[in-house]
Length: 157
Image (tube, rainbow, N blue to C red; front, side, top):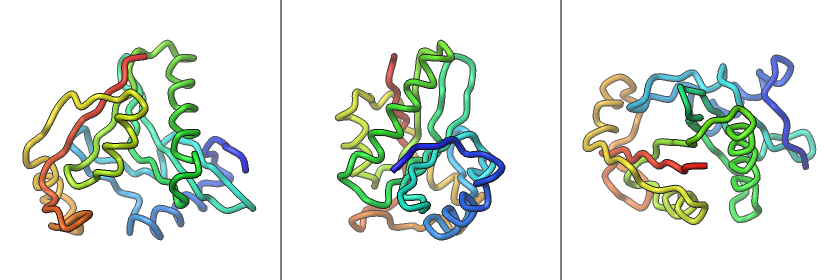
């Protein structure tokens, strides 16, 4: 198992990963529209297969996580990737790690809060607005929860 930076050499694997797991590499959230396959990020590989992936952007004094995926939950993959993101932030002397998730993503809320992230903003209808730009976003999310709102979480380093 190894964590590597996303590079030109592994970019095609990233495109395939996003298409297989998200339908497309496009992410539409309140902070912007992102082509995740073109962003900086890290991959967690095992046997030359991506089993974890994180992408990010740097804005002012913070690093914003745009996507975090682990294909094998409970094995420390997401935790390892987030620790690397926090280390990148510290190396670049950034004060904050932020991210956006949705109201239905209870596993993500639990994951991030256990690691010191706090909900700082709730954006009512944030997902509904994103759906106007990306109609493929479903109406119903995890556990049958209507998918409507975005939550911004932050960790001060």
